[in-house]
Length: 172
Image (cartoon, rainbow, N blue to C red; front, top):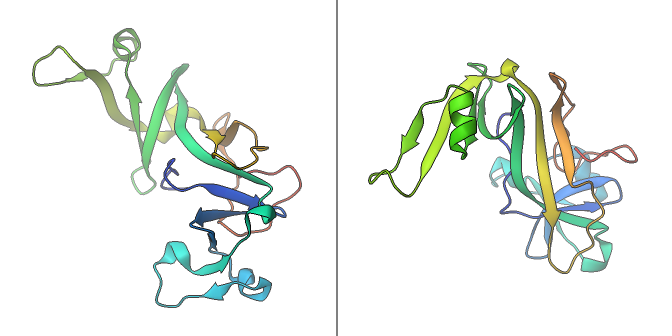
């Protein structure tokens, strides 16, 4: 996984598959979706190759990714922008004490009074765990785990594209 999901687009689960959900239409990447009543769009951007309308009653669970977190030197940090080719990942800490303890130089706003951020790229091998914190989507059931790991104890967990068949209890 090179880019982390954000909380803009809801993700829905229907019969052990997860899809992006926008205005009563679900989207996925998996070519096998074409045989399941999805329309293939050759001209569409890669993030919407297969789509079909969906009834709200079909949706078993819906969530948005609230934040992506990692554990760096024992401290929970926000993570983004994993650059697989360089092996670097962007980490962010908003707490002065933690930022200083991690040895990260602060980025200070123009008047040095309002915001102090500690942000930098580090080797992804130094981030032992990476996980999504998920939250409910209004007016939909929320049955998925609140935290789902993408990397645990230094090992990446297999990532499935939208629309791929998942095992029972699998949420990635």
